[in-house]
Image (tube, rainbow, N blue to C red):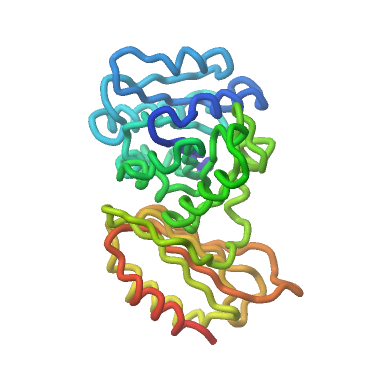
Length: 313
């Protein structure tokens, strides 16, 4: 059986700069290697026309959000691309700025016919010049919450104090995301889309003490840390007893763990209620430490922190 077609979701609030980034990523790849599905709420598509010069296959889905009204159309488009005589190596799904990622990810998680496609990552674009205004919208916070990678667009228009503030705001709402700065479609941390997605496997930074903010939403990012190893059996029990009950309320789960008796880093990646565990580079001489971040809404922070601490060897 052939490997499933990799699908990367590019989301972000209205006017964040998603199309500019997608256009730049297409510049560095062979025409036809990446197909693009563009969703626009209106009946007339604009972004698809802008991208057509660089991508051999551009599918426009108009007249409603792929998170709800046109979700079935998204699945059909992915099935068609996966079943093409020469399928692309990757599909980029650029959502409307008004789309909730939840429905899009549910559609992709079906895998289509016989597991023809699979989610490979979520990239959320946030305008660094407007981060405070953007974070007042629950939809924007949801888009940030699901992200594997957050790209701060228009970073070149900001001084370092503004970038530092934007970084703190993103970390407050999704401590699991990797942050990168972007300007006119160029992302400083990576020369290509593959390099950007590879950053997900980097070690999680130690949790920072962030300033309190006034908030009316219930989205939360809980960062936990153990300077040492975790017991594998106790960690599995913690996931079952403390994390699993929040099924349906999780956006992202990410952990890089030092498990007693295991030489390699254990990498936990979760989107919504789906969790994947892989093993990365050996710890070798690096300090063995364990980090876990859970992002969702109406979480019990105290119970999660207490439960994770109990996993320490």
